[in-house]
Length: 113
Image 1 (cartoon, one colour):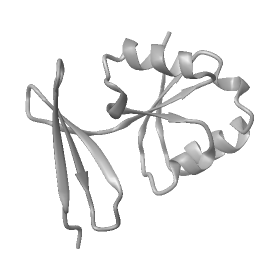
Image 2 (cartoon, rainbow, N blue to C red):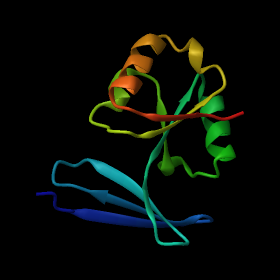
Image 3 (cartoon, rainbow, N blue to C red):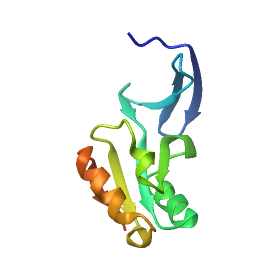
Image 4 (spheres, rainbow, N blue to C red):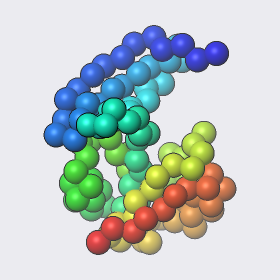
């Protein structure tokens, strides 16, 4: 059984950002858009912090709505996450392992330009 121990609410242009923690101390972020839909955090595969920031801005997301993938362990425990690829992501040091993990967790991948 999953119990929520604490929540934080932030307001953004695209709706409301709700952060909820579970008893283990993990924090999950959800956005509540204008249609009151919950969507899980998105993930960005980018080669540099600058590219991550630019991709996040292109998607109109605030920092807590998007997580930068830099290693396969960033994807642990996920199932079918939304992943955006941007910039020089192919040059990440462990890209082969990251791509294998993305296939394993059945990530929904989209390239942005």
